[in-house]
Length: 89
Image (tube, rainbow, N blue to C red; front, side):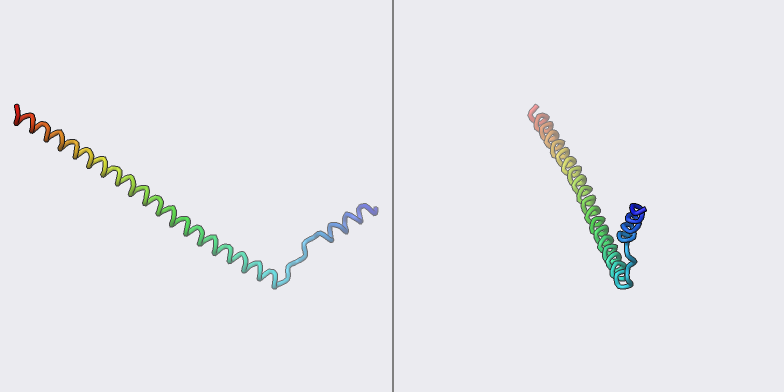
């Protein structure tokens, strides 16, 4: 019987005590502040992700334009060579 009593007493002693109103209000304020920080972090991450995506798209477009310009330059070089061979031949 004393083992059961000791176990019951240990459970009662380790049970969480109800929060006082001050502690409850402080905890609510802490949670609200954390929620605001999470929202700010999400917004910053979202903005950063959008910036990264925009930079990737700009890079792809720049690469496309470079490829097109290189192709045009090579085409004009070929045309110039053809004109020179026609004039000399």
